[in-house]
Image 1 (cartoon, rainbow, N blue to C red):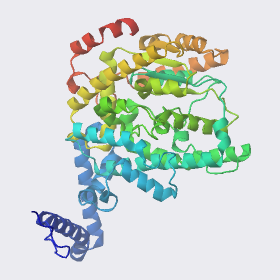
Image 2 (image 1 turned 30 degrees about the vertical axis):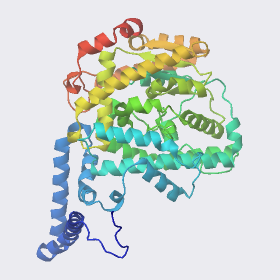
Image 3 (image 1 turned 180 degrees about the vertical axis):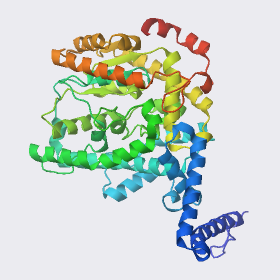
Image 4 (image 1 turned 45 degrees about the vertical axis):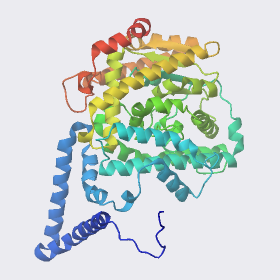
Length: 500
């Protein structure tokens, strides 16, 4: 019979862990003492010059490995935090996951009500997506600064959920806010023209889209409900997040802007508001194709209920703006059933593009997102390709099944990408007619102006896709992601014939 060890017996520590801790301590001691030792030999000015040279060398080396997908600023910060990251110092002591984010968010806000049963089961989607994603991308690892950014952003999403729940408690009338018309959602698989079409539809003076700055700071920081106080607070929040935005824009670099433009005063998709429960935090998004099969089984949970509350908060704080929301998010496609359940009167504008074009383009998008938080040279593009193909098929199948399920109640307007490119004004006019929005001369004038500016910009910088040019041009191909054109054509033959 096995005997229990006496409780007063002191176990010998595992030598492997002792040596590991000692080596970390030794390296840390050397790292701290080296500048002081150098100072004794060559003085402070020369010491600073040597440390600066080491930092510059590290930055140049990382930029060489990363290429255009990472900005110089990102490479500089990765080099700066390389040693603390590898020694697990400071912020690196705790893991970058949803459970850590929840704890950090509660500690920072002093709030604890996530509007759930207290088990934080809403975080299961994040846990599953990240676990499967890291298994699939097993060779990939966080870059030093990517780890910090991802950890902070994930914590901020959980802070936002806590703050939203708290604000709604203190201002319960927000839940009674009504919209002039049901929100209109532009959906479609990623890279099918959703952003361009959404920009055009958002020019309608009778509609409103949520802007980038509103997603950075959607909740009022005042409890004064007067219109004057709310307008003043919106301006304060607008000014208060400018520096953060410009830093993030420089951090992302021109390459990411070439893949997906993000501007402070322009509209943006629904990622922030839906990431209260769905793992759509920007630096977790690349795990979605990897985990799609298991993730989709969990459904959207209460994600769209929270999204509705955010729209009500934004409407409530600025009643002078139009309250017909023009929304857009390609990631909705796999969750149309859940989206329709919450927004039962909302029409969907479904964009379609040949999968031979949108699938490799979406591979490039997911690769760009992955590179933002991971070291690019550790990422296997063929793994991304395999998972994106699987994700695309699952998304299309679920979307068509949802439309069939709700065929008597859901309104879907199908739009070809080729039509958007060929005659965007006619497309917008047809959508207005189908959704009950008036097509005014003012709106038409704004469309013409925007389209002219867009054409002029595209002449300067091609963002069309296949290209031999390297740099800020968005370049991609099926082959680099290990995909076969014949297989994709055969798989989507009926879809291409009907919708593309």
